[in-house]
Image 1 (cartoon, rainbow, N blue to C red):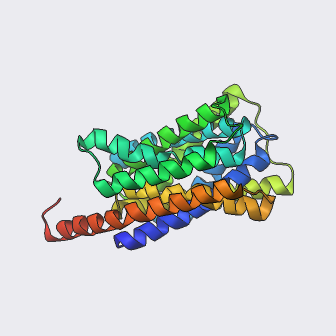
Image 2 (cartoon, helix red, strand yellow):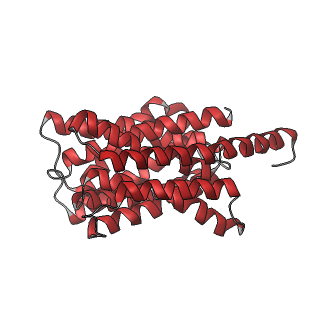
Length: 298
């Protein structure tokens, strides 16, 4: 897989996750948050194990350890996100989660102790401006739900960076599948301790849960793990900043939501930031892959 192909896969993942806010909003008022997380990841894990059973069962302790770490992060991301969505709007939650795009290069800079390049910094500035236009309105306040969404964004940024590291050391398919299982396990334990489990009881609720299962979990997180092996965490973060734009498009189509002129301007600026940054990332990733093939990097 080339870095370009990996980036396109991540774009499709971002598109799938853009639909997740609609699905979550449809069920959050009738099904407890931990139960939703347990169902979406649990069903996704079972399905992926059945499909790839010959490749999944032959694993090792390191893969399971890394998957447990990623699964715990997924659990933290979606518990805080589900409760955040319950206390704010789906569109606001989507845009706040997209602050991940700013957090990833900042955290990465601390890790490698090196400032981002000029083009990366410029991309961060563009995306920050776009997100500000999308999220800060006359009635916007940093409410409880918003704080939870920002915590989810931080955990999401950590998940991207950690996934990028783990994906270069173990089987990415197994890593992507087992993290779903561990996330489901943590959520299931919490469900029986803190909630009264409730299964979906209407067709629309089942559609929402299965959408979260197949599109957002089974495809999204498994393909993220595979694709991140061939690209950079900064590039991943920027491509995932397309998520609120897809969310806004789907909300307009299915929920007749309108962001207004200011919102659409912010979306365009985000696209500009993504383009500015990913051109640099693609070249850097190509150089890295050439070094790997020539034996310079191991």
